[in-house]
Every structure is written in structure tokens, then in C-alpha cells.
Image: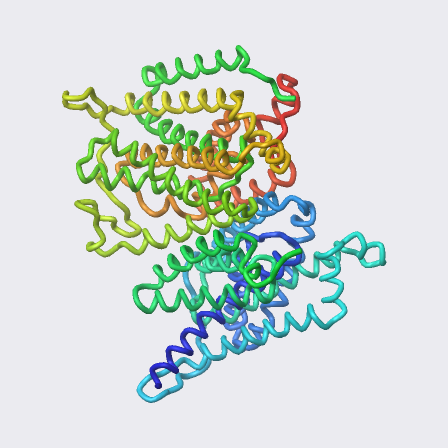
Length: 286
Length: 335
């Protein structure tokens, strides 16, 4: 029984971290049809924000609050400087953001060096019978659930969310009604970047902080967003659920590397069965 | 309109290239020849990407994966004593198989070009981790120890020979000529294909896939065929690379290596195949120059170069140059 509970928490953590990491790109892709290859580097910059605040004697919590703000602003700069010239040319956007990703990694390495820095994990371990569970992992599950719910609420129930969804459906009509679509795109991209920054900040104590941090996550993020497709909420949630479960089960039976291989194979099969994304399995597109 | 058949200038270029490939080893010191050989191998990899991207508009971010798989296949088989030409062929087949599997999922599932790019990149990244995790000596195939991030060492060099006679290992000059000759053959065949019916249909797929389908052409197997061929050539390039350095390691699957292939073709320009060659040479020369300063600087410059070319010089060097010098009418690049 205790054994089951511990495994359940482990699986939930795998799903939650995948959801948290992928949500930002899912929003950007779902809303704008743009794949940002520098998304992993936004995660990395979020982690460095936490490291920076920790190095100045401030708490981890401040870093976690600050990271989305910092990375969101960087995202807006990137959108203004590069992405906005490339709307309607998704492959060019991918090429440009790939270049940006290389430049971010190299730039960070030049500034802070290539070493891995640690951030202390705040909570202790929780004992369940003869097992122990890191409380921080439960905290990550909470943060993932909260950011998912908040993003859903934002897009579903607020005016800005309504405008964003309207822009996605018909940008010209939105412009005719007096709202600037470029501003909506800018804010959406910034929001997606901020989510990546938050994910990086939250994951930093677990992974350590290094300029190549984004590369460790980007394969998982791509798989989840590709299979989740444009259904930002249901698709990403379902994809995270499936891949998180597959990854943790296979990783438990063999090694974390094969967990990722299993994710990839599972994604290839899913893409063949449901090329329009996983949500097309239960939803008919018009 | 692009020209409808090969010009005499192109034949002249091939002949000049063939003469250079045969003659250069007589003029240059061995060190330069060895260096140039790896440049030619990269040219071959760049040309293979241009076959998919420039001709058919299929942008793959994972050509490093086909290259690396070809290299590993060559390494594993050659270390186990298979004749090296057969191992090289096996390298090409492995590259084509991997490209074929990914292409099958992508083209027959009709997923968008974005997904093709993302999936190929993802496969590359996962191969990097898988091959990197084989450090334990128990990971071996026959007598080939995979060696984790250290890779496979002591891979035999390519040796050619007639059947029944003992084959002789090509020296640096012979290997240079072999690689150069192979590159010229691939270039020539690729250019001939551009003007053949198959190549023309690929061009229409690139320009307007829906219209091609409505005209009654099955685009799926054509895309799959060119993508697998492209992966196969990348695999052969990988085998040649493993033979060149007598080793292969997971670094070939790294993000920067994958980016480099794309940068070569992006910088050189797509569709003409010559652009890929020029791009690979220019960027590799730049990389080598910057490498003396530091690898982080190289990555920084290459990254910014990529952004700059996408934003400012979308067509790439060679098509832009040709357009400006009016040798060719405007060559359309795939979106």
C-alpha cells in the first residue's frame, strides 16, 4: 500500500514536471503556430535567475517569482527583435530560434562558465512507512497543477484570454474591432516564455544549473507539444499524462535514458495513428 | 523559370572539380589533404540535406542523426571484420532506413513540415543520450565496444580492392580522391535528377503540394523516396567520417552538429546543390578560424549567423550571387 502510494507520487511527479515544462511551448504553438527552438534556453535562463537570487542571499521563493518575469521580458524582446518578422513562415521561425538557442547557450557559457551550479532544495523528506518522499517533488506537482489551472483560467475567463483566442481564430477581424494582433502575439509569446522561465526556476534545485540545461529537457518538450498539437489544454495534459507515465514506468524498469526512448517510440506510433494530434482521437475537427 | 536542362558551364564545373580532386594531392602537403578530406565529407552531408530541403522542401533537423547512424554502422561492422566497402554500404543503408522510418510516419501520416523538423531533431537528441549512456564495457556489439561518450576507437580505414585479391588501404591521397569522386558523382546525379521528371515533380511538391496531388501525383512515396535517399547519402558520409578519423563518438548527434548541417545549407543557399558545397566550405573555414579563439565563440557566431541569414539573406550566398550576376533567373527557394 505504501509502496503503491510512493510509486503514485513518483508517476505524478513525472507527469507534472513534463506538463510544467511543456505548457509554455504548448501555449506558443497552440496560439501562434510557432515552434520556439530556444524554449529550452528559456528554461535554462529561468534556472539561472534562481541561481542568481540564491547567490545574493535571497530566498528560492523570490527567485521562483522573479524567473517568469525576467524570462517573460526576454521572450518579449525576442519576439520584437526576431519572431515578428517571421510570422507565416514557421520553418524560418524554427531556424532563427535554433540559432538563438545556440547563441544563448554559448553566451551563457562565456559569461558564467560551463560548470554545473547547485541550488539547495528547501524542504525535507517526508516519511511514508519505510519509504521517503521529497516534499519538494510534491511542491512541483502543486506548481504544475496551479500553472495549468491559472493558464486555463486566463485563456478561458479573462478579457485578454478572449482576445488571444479571437486573434488565433481570426486576426483580421480582431484588428477590425480595434485590437492590435501584433500586441496580442507579443504578449502570448511573452507569456509562453514566462511559463518556461517558471519551469526552469522550479526544476533548478532538482537538476542543477548549467548552460546546456535546456538540452536535457527539449526533447521531452518537443515530443509532448508535437503530440499534444494545437489543443493547448486537453492535448498537452493528455500527452503529458501518457508520456510521463510511459517514461516513469520504463525508467523504473531500466534506465531514464530508455524512458526517453520509450517516449519517442510511443510518440511515433501516436503520430501515425493520430497525425492531427492526440486530441483528434476524441474530437472531430471541422 | 529555372533553366530546363543542364548548361555547358555545369559540365565544365564537374570536369574542373574532377581534375582538382585528382590533382590536389600532388600539389598540397598531406596534412592539408587530410584536412580537406573531412571538409569534403561535410560537403557530402550538406548536399544530402539540400536534396531533401532544397529540392523537395523537406527540412530535416536530424541529418546529423543519419550521418551518425551511418558512422556507427560502419564502425561497428568494420571493427567486427566486415570488408570496409560493405561496411560503408551498410552505413548508407542504416541512414536510409532511419530516414525511411521517420519519413514514413511523417509523410504517410501527412504531418506538417514543422513536425518533420521537430521529430528529426528529437530523434537526434535521444540518440545522443542513448549512445552516451553506453560507457559500460558490457555495451558491445561483437568486438566493437561502444564506449559511451568516448565512442568507438580503432575503426579500420576504408580499403578498396578487387574481389579475391587482398584489398589495399587507401592512403590519405587515395581516400581524398575517393571522397571527392563520390561527392562529384552525387552532385552530378542530383543535378541530373533535378531535370528528370522525378525531380520536376519534387519541385512542384515543394512549390505547391496540394496542387501536385490534385494533378494526380502520389506525393507520399516521392517524398519518402527522396528523404530516404538523402538519409542514405548522409549515412555514407558518416561512414566516410568514421573511416577518416578511425573513430566515432556521440558528439555527431549533438545539437550543435545538427545545427551545423542546417547552417551550411542555409548559408550556401538551397536547391542548386552547389550552394550546399560552398556553404559547408565557407562555414567550416570560419569555424576553424574561430576555433582557435574558443569553442563558445564559434557557437555564438554560428548561432547569430543563423539568425542573420534567416532574417536578412534568406536565399543564401550562391543563389543570391547568381541572381545578382544574372547568370540564372531568380531561383525560388522553398518556404
